[in-house]
Length: 102
Image 1 (cartoon, rainbow, N blue to C red):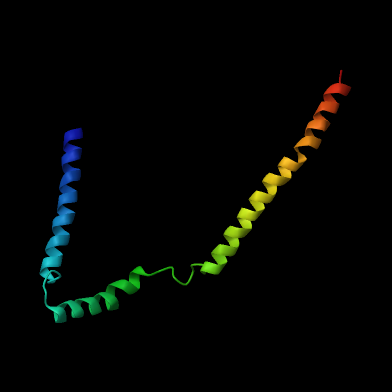
Image 2 (spheres, one colour; image 1 turned 135 degrees about the vertical axis):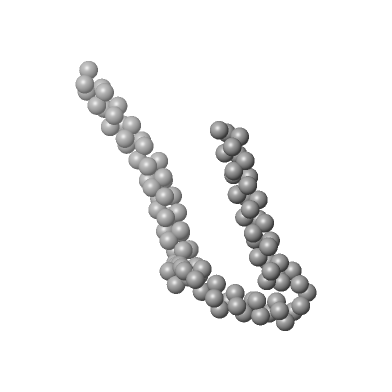
């Protein structure tokens, strides 16, 4: 069963690569004709690329990302130092509880 699965998987991979190469040869992707390449690029921009670009309007700006990352970083640093600052009083409280519970 494992041999058959590995063979089928390899066949699918080889088929996909062969199909992509065949499609690129049929469309003269590999030619040195600049006019043909320009026409293909214009078709690509017109028909294929608009369907693949989905999220650019929804992405946050660089400034928003920097502000959010800086806020989270500063909040984390503040919480670490606050915890370190409160360790002596916390230890004192725990020690007093232990002493008084004897």
